[in-house]
Image (cartoon, rainbow, N blue to C red):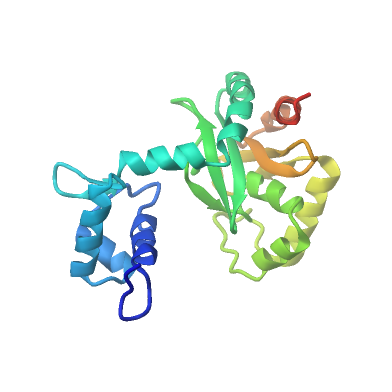
Length: 249
């Protein structure tokens, strides 16, 4: 395995190149990739060429670089969230049909919520999440659910991080977050009105596996108005359905 003068392997540098892409920026120039990764442009260009040869990256019509189909294929084939998504999809579709806005499935990945599926509508309320997109755990209803049932050391690690506010309603102090997560465990759902955007309310509930461990959060994003609470019962029912499917019951 070839190593750079710094001791970093080619695989590590290739991983940095792939990680330079985001859900919002799926095409980048070689120069931009080099800047984001801290690699010399010649090194970045050489590694990009190799990754392109193997189909892990691809070139666009303007010579921009994007994630290749082969990388998507391998990720989809090996993803541990595939069975979770398959179990959740029928309930997500029913949930989406009832609420008419956003219905989504998220998992905890590091200190973020990673959204593995989302169903939406053209005129739905604003929502910052997207498939394969991330949100900080402290601002989203899915994040509150996932942290409420996470090990204590995970919660402590998150509370040591900067906790920026997205709106005036975003909870950003450790004491208040601890109380919010305790409330989730007591009532069985998270209800966050205006925490990510003033016009939207996020509601999330836990999804459990056969061992009764919380493995995901099922959530809806609806308008921040007096009707928002009406989504709680249907969301809880959908989560019970996903849990039954995952448990084989």
